[in-house]
Every structure is written in structure tokens, then in C-alpha cells.
Length: 468
Image 1 (cartoon, helix red, strand yellow):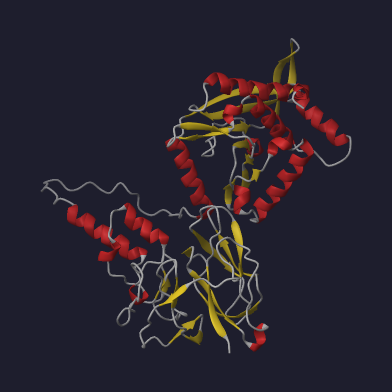
Image 2 (cartoon, one colour):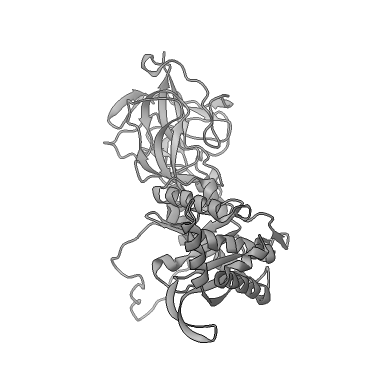
């Protein structure tokens, strides 16, 4: 006899609290194997294929494409042990953080009203299974939903078809809230969830319930408007226009840049440098045979040498402890523009790599960024960022530091310009370098010394020989 198991959105690591469904990879009725990807989701860090830890037949899917779900929300249900599923399920390889089937989690049963019988999912009707709850907090499940009804998936990731009948009784456990986002919204606004009546299935408190309560409280606190003889001015909000949600990668970029500007007292210095000799050195390296060396790799090698001389810029600030933390390893981030927006992959232990190794790793991470295959680990942990905005055909910029790092080096395009070389006017390959730095970790003298060393290495690559 088949057993119906529920698979929830797992913890994808790096502090991520949710993800958006981009594309379903299975349909209801499909047979899936252990660790087979069933859905493609987008987090604030990357695109991720989520594998299912069960083998069996898909009996339900929760959430349409474009829906945002919190970690822990139901994704699919799978009937395991059926004849066409290859037998009972076994433990998966635990391929993502936060789930696996090698050991069953502790559960406590919730009592469902007898009126709950069956639900339809994606046009297919299946029997509603008994609802159970993990030991990590309350939840409310439905075995499916009917597309013809007014069902929806709200921002908390819970399935809501409206309340019908009395809410289910909870044997034990706190307030019926599944979404950590709902809890945080209530906590940040001083709202007691125990005073709310949920409108979700079986009394589940949804994000809409919290927002409604906050609006009602705001109306009660609002003073009555004073009488005025003149008409109220027109709203400053323009009519029409297109609203674009700040979510996924774009939302993560917005949050990080806002935090950088609000927390980091940054300053910028810049200098023009003659890159003619650097371009010649690269051409000579590539003409000698072997793997091609990229310009970005040479600039990265210069950065790691400069950070060895000026370690203040490879640090972070802990304001709670009032300490500057100088970091031993250089994990070098680099800006990459993709169809999904700007991402910053990280080359781990860049200080221990030569130009050839750096070229290989830059190429691998750039390709993964373009195809959406970067993992959260490859997008976090940077200690210094190199931003080559010259690929956009511009000369200069004032970079925004990638919080919580302390500095970012910006590189403009390399173009022929008039330049005084050895006392005579000549046409040389000139580049503008700009350094944004956290003024808490160093003064202008240190930042200027770092930038001058980088410029010297660009103009005379043999300067690097002193540090090799």
C-alpha cells in the first residue's frame, strides 16, 4: 500500500528564508526517483534545482510558477511504495541543507475535522491525507487544491482556499503560523499573534492577516483631519507606470546596496594609469602557449599582491564589538552582469592562485553565472571585490562597496589616449582605476598607497616580481 509523504522547501543555506518557483520540472502523476530535481527555484543568491528525497508518484504540487514560498512550505506530495515507484522509499543523499530521509523527524499529530475529505490538485482529485506536524513548529496543510475554486498561495507560502467550517484543533503547540516572514513582520511591529484570527485553512494566520491588523491599528491611531477651506492637494504619486517587484537577485542587490550606503562611511580615490606594458605582457604570455591568461586574472593577481602590502583593505568591521577584523585569506569577488541582473561570484583563496588558475576559475564562475548555475556558496564569503565596468564602455565610476567588505577596486575601459611617456607625448593604452574604501578601516594614506601600488603594477608589471 502506498504511503503519501510531503516534501517541503528545504533550507537552501546561507541564511536564505525563501525562494520563488521559476519552473516545475514534474507534473502530477509523474514517477520520480530519489534526488531527482522536481522544481527550479530562484533565491536571493542563485537559481537552484531542488531534488526530492523520495521515490514514488507525484500526487500534488503546491504553488504556481512565480509564487514565493518560505523555507518549510509544502512543495509536493509523493506516494511511495506503489508498484510503479520501485518499492518503498529509502534515505536520500541529503543533497541540500536542512533535509534528508535517513532519519524520520519527531512528529506530533494534529486533529483534522471529519469534514475534510478530499481535495483536487491541478485538475486531479486525490484523497486528503491526515495532517501531521513536525516538532519544529505549527503548520497547516492541505493535500491539494482546486484550480476552479478561489484558492491561492499567499506570501507566506500557505495554501489558502478560504475558511470553511470550524478550524482544526491543535493538540499542542504555539500560534498557527507557518511562515517565518509572518512572525518577523508581527514581531517588528509589536503585534501579538495570539490576538489574531487567521483566515487561512484551519485558522492559519497569513501575512494578509497581519497586514490587515497593522492597517487597522494605524487607522485607530490616526488623528482626525483638521477642517480646511481649501481642497486637498493632488497626490504626489504619479498615475500609471509599471511597478516591478524587488525580489530574487534584484531584491537582494537592492538590500545589500542600501545597507552598504547606510552603514559604511565610504570614500573614493582614483588615478589614471598607462596599461600599455600590462597589455604587452599579457600578449607575450598567451603567445608562449598554454591556457590563455585573461586581463581580469592579471588585475586580480595585482590586487592580491596589493592586499598583502595593505591588509587593512582586506577586512570587515564589527561595530557590536567595536573591532576591525583583518582577514587572513583573500576571497575575491568580481562583478558579473547576467540576464537575471548583477551577481558577484567569489574566487575562494585568490591569494594562493597564480594567473593561470585565476583565469580558469574566472571562466568557470562566469559561465555558471550566465546559466544561473551558481551555488549560494559561490556567491558569498567575499572579502574584496574587483569590478571591471570597462566592459560597458565607460571610463570611470564610484563603486558601492559590497557589504560587509571594506573596499572595491573599479577598472574602466582601456583605450588609446595621449600620454606623456619618457618625456614625450605618445599614444598609450590608458585605464582609470578607482578605489572605494571604508574610512573606518584606514585613512586616505593607506587607500592611496594601495591604489598607487596597483597603478604601478599596471604600468610596470615587473614590479610584481618583488612579491612573487
